[in-house]
Picture 1 (tube, one colour):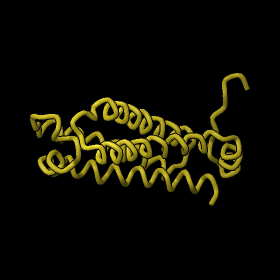
Picture 2 (cartoon, helix red, strand yellow):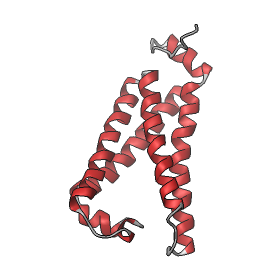
Picture 3 (tube, rainbow, N blue to C red):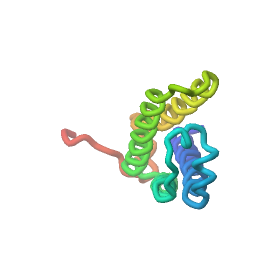
Picture 4 (cartoon, rainbow, N blue to C red):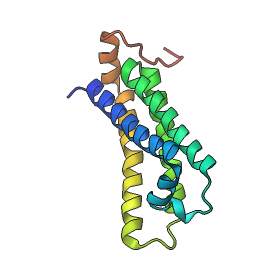
Length: 149
């Protein structure tokens, strides 16, 4: 599979996850609060807050989806950088708030969140590679050029 195909597949995968998470939180905030591990560990429930979280995920899915459609290098990198920023901050929060959680849940959560950050990081590396830039340029996709070139 070519780098461009990996990037598109990765963007679609991340967008789909955000659509599912966002729709769940936005449309069914009580269920999201009660059923997602660790969310209910931070009471009290706020429909407004949980719905806003859902809206964030849905908006992030839109950007990832547009990047997957356009495959314009700058948009792809910006979408992945935004996702990675959230994923890293989310990971840091949860790793520093594992107290009171059963060990197997803490390990599972941490592992899932590490992968959630590793996937966009790997895709950013692919998006930034010179080989991908050359192939994108041949396909008519603008490449990012440094100001000194």
